[in-house]
Image (cartoon, rainbow, N blue to C red; front, side, top):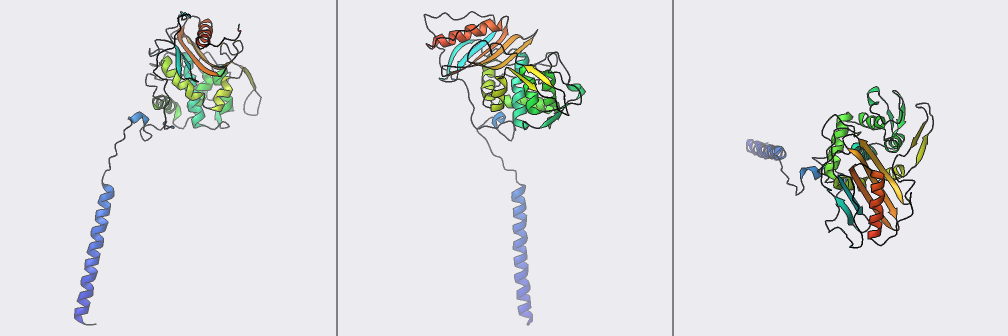
Amino acid sequence: MSKQKLLNRIYIFVVLFAFGFIYLISEQNFFKQKIVLFSPLPDFLTYFKNNQVTTLSIWMPTKSAIIKRQDLEQPEISAKSSIVYDLTNNKTLFEKNPHQKLPMASLTKIMTAIIAVENYKADDRLKVRKEDLVGENSMGLSSGEVLTVEELIYGLILVSGNDAAEVLASNYSGGRLGFIKAMNNKAKSLAALDTNFTNPTGLEGDGNQYSTTFDLLVITKYAMGFPIFRKVVSTVNYTIPWSNSHKEFYVENETNLLTSFPGVKGVKTGYTDEARLCLVTYLDYEGHEIIGIILGSERRREEMKELLDYSLNLQGITPPPHE
């Protein structure tokens, strides 16, 4: 090979090597560049900022005027806040201070159930720890017992078990604090922005925990979309049979009107000295699905009956006979 040909080949090699090196450097610099993407959504509705965002659509009650009839007098209630909403025709039937932030007691457990349903499998087995045994309301758990998530949800809802709530929270992948963070993030993802959780039970004394009847309407409607939640809240009583990992439990639903007002199918009661009597009720009657919510009442049972009767009469539906 002549000297000239050798030099030509060396020259070609050097040129190709140089171009290749420049290409690699440019590619590395490209990938090192920070690409900024702007979302039209606020952070609390963006999955990368809030991993509890699980739906692309947000349901909100319509802003249409409240239905009224001159021949029907609105109920006078002691509750500080209330809302009754017909899901079937998307109409507000009654409201009183629906955006007032108030303590909600054990209505908290509706969100506790949502986080449990979305983050566990129904047959996941969770262990009870000594620190989970808190509060007056209890399903009767003992330290060291192991129950399925579904069994714990029955105890959580039917007898408002604070122990069940704490077991669901403490076994969460992020621990109890991670569970509470998930509760708040889920509320934000549903646009329930006037709600804040500091514990999974609704007990007083560890922070600023509050919601509104408007937000609780949004949260409850979302919860009712889960078949397991809908099944549990409509159950009057339930026996969890003995197993090698736990004793037998009998739990009975405390939800007012479930057995006395035809068409009522749950959802949850709540009470603390601070929150007073609270109640969320779901009614499915004559083709209408209605959710009623009361916070800060002195007689929630009677007032909810009055509100349901009024809401049905308002739409030309004769309320069912009830106790």
